[in-house]
Length: 416
Image (cartoon, rainbow, N blue to C red; front, side, top):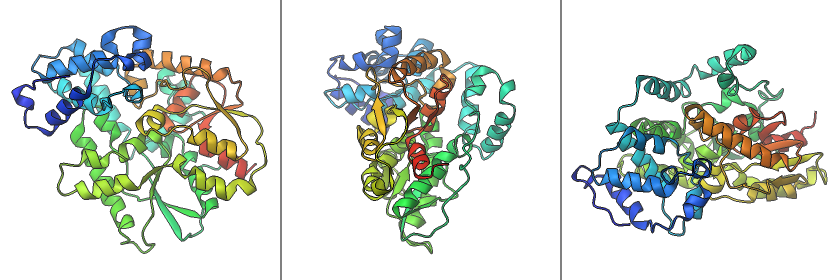
């Protein structure tokens, strides 16, 4: 696809990147067949190819409208289109650029601006934990849209953290909402890795990975989050702490994993951080990438088969963003679990997509319910996934327990 950038975008990093991405697009439309919003709405402009045309027009100087903004807002950034694209179009990077440009040119109504500000600042605030605790206390009184985001109970072992010192150490991103929303995911990760002989280290000053602000068009805020994390992690990576250096950064939220693995790209033009960012990205490991080692060490401790059938929902950020497929199911089966993915549409998004379920609740719930119907066909005793947003979003629509796969493994290792 040829494009002629408007003068305002010529010579800018964003313009150069967008132009390079657009040149790869060959108009084939394969992406349309796997786009969740196109499948729901049937509008070409609510599929990747149509959105690419809209962004191309803006980059060439056309004035965007509220309609342009709406079509880009409806995109889940699930990146299913990237898995389908035969030309390797990096749509995720392009839509982040396009949204930022359109948001700069098309003022949002005051209500939308307020909600987006609250999401950016509230979810990443130190006070989020207090707000979540209050929400759990008054959950029956909350409106349904808010109650859906508040777990009904906390796992009894959510605060039990291993105390042994291990020779092998890995940093772990605690996350911004996960410690307050579903704290047992981090605790279960620490317990499972401790059983493998790996000590989890948390850098206290690290926080949101940067994805939340970036996807809400606050690119400067997202980059600031990334730099803060790099500063917090670097002493552990360079061996400047009393505990020595860590060997990797393990991430148990697949959406954060996508972002951290992209630090090198995001900060490539920052001379002060480019090399450190690339190093951070190279050390990032989704928790599922450690499953071969986990299986090797823990298989003798596991029963031949675990009770109940697990339905695994692979998050888009795992299978499309990180291009990691089959590792969770294969690892859990090797450990004796009966686990399967949905027979239909296992590649499609569940509708969570970070803040999408708040900003686009109608579309989000349609995708959630569609996903749950497909998972229910497996008649599982529990649904497992690999990202906090997907887990809570799916749980809001079903009575079947939904948890992180590492929690299922931890429960099997430490039965009540």
